[in-house]
Every structure is written in structure tokens, then in C-alpha cells.
View 1 (tube, helix red, strand yellow):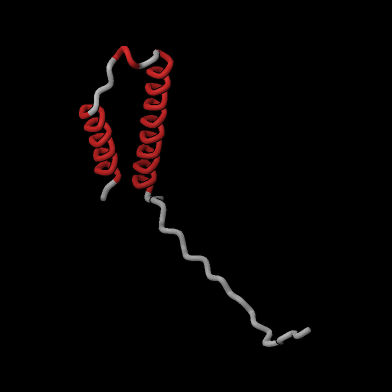
View 2 (cartoon, rainbow, N blue to C red):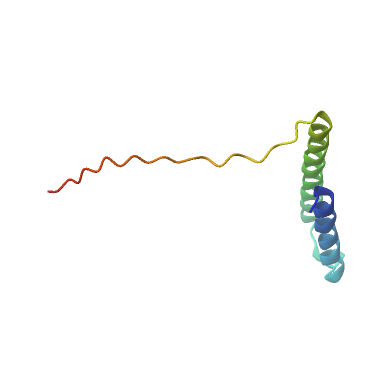
Length: 83
């Protein structure tokens, strides 16, 4: 699934959830509304920065490659200690 499709799906689910259960305007405090709006702007900003960075990396041919799996090596001396 591409990044654009994932973002579109998340936005669609958020809008659908808002429309299904709308809150009454008088039930929300002004500070709560400002906090929600600020969080929404922050989330959108982070998504935009990540998408733009990904697009620029692909244009330069520097798209992130999957990380290599670290190899763990354990050495067994074969010596058993007893008390």
C-alpha cells in the first residue's frame, strides 16, 4: 500500500468517525476545541514533512533501503562450571 493511499485511508476514517458521532457545540469547551485543532495541525504538518522528504529522496535516488538484519554471534567455550 502506498503512502498516499494510507494517508487517504486514515483521513477518510477520521472524517467518517467525526460524521457518525457529532458532538454538540455547547458541550465542548473553547480550550478543548483549540487543543484538538492544534493537534490536527501538528499531525498534518508531520505527515506533509514525511511525504515531501520521501518524494525528494526518491527523486534523488536515495530512497531508504530496508535495514539489514543484525547478525548476533554467540561463542560457547564448552566449559561447564560446577560449585
